[in-house]
Image (cartoon, rainbow, N blue to C red):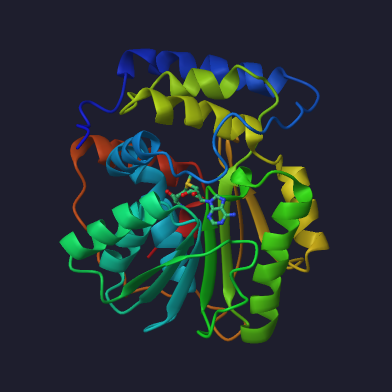
Length: 295
Ligand SMILES: C[S@@+](CC[C@H](N)C(=O)[O-])C[C@H]1O[C@@H](n2cnc3c(N)ncnc32)[C@H](O)[C@@H]1O
C-alpha cells in the first residue's frame, strides 16, 4: 500500500491569494482538453495512487459530499452513485449514515475490486453494492428506486457533451420516475491555465499518476456554464448551482427529492479525522455556504 505522509505543503499557502487574484483577472474561456487522463481508470498504479489520495488529500471534499448527500437522503433511503471509483466516498457515507443502502457504479474492474475490498475490511459490504456499469446507461437494468443519484468527479471523464448529456438524461429519467434527489459535483474549468496546477503544487501527492491526473482533470472539466446548459437540455432544469469559493475550481449542482424537500438532519454520525484531514475538511466546507453540508 502507498503511504500517505504529510499531505500539505503549508509554506506554499501564502501563494494562494495571488493565484485567486490572477484567476479573477483572467478573461476568456479556455478550450476543454480531454485525453490527458484515461476515461475509465483501470490502470493498476493509477488506481492504487487514486485510492491512497482518497485516504488523504481527498478526504476533505469527500467529507463535504458525504454530508451534503446525507442531507438529501431520507432515513433508510437508497443512494445510487455514478463513477464510484475506489469507494472512499461511499465508505465515508455508509459510516456516516448507518441506515442507508448504497449502490455504486463504475466501469473499472480494478476500481471496483479495490472498493469491494475496502467495504469488506470496514464491515460495509452488506450495505454497499458495487456494480460494473456505464454511467451513461446505468438506469437500463436498475430495479431499485433510488432516493438520491449522485455523481462525484466523474463527468469530466466523459469525452464530449453528447456523452455527458447521455449520463444526465439517464439521471433525469430516474428523477422523473422516482422523484429522487440529485447531487453532482465536479471540477469546473478555470480561466487561467496556471491556476489549478498552482493549487496542486500545495499538496503532496501519493504518486506521479494521480498528480498528473489531478492536473488533467481540470483541463477536461466542463465550465460551469457548459454543465448548467447540459443539465437544462437533459431535463434537469430545476437544480441549484454553486461554485466553490474563492477560486471556483469545483462546481456543484443539486436538488432535493420531490417527496423529501426538507434537509435530512440528525442521522449523520461523525467519524474522527486526523489533524491534516481536519484542515482539508475545514477548507472544503468553507468553500461552500455552511448550510450545504450541515448535518
Ligand atoms: C475521478 S474518479 C471519481 C471517484 C469517486 N466518485 C470520487 O469522488 O472519489 C472517476 C471514476 O469514474 C469512472 N468512469 C469514467 N467513465 C465512466 C463511465 N462511462 N461509466 C462508469 N464509470 C466511469 C472511472 O473509472 C473512475 O473510477
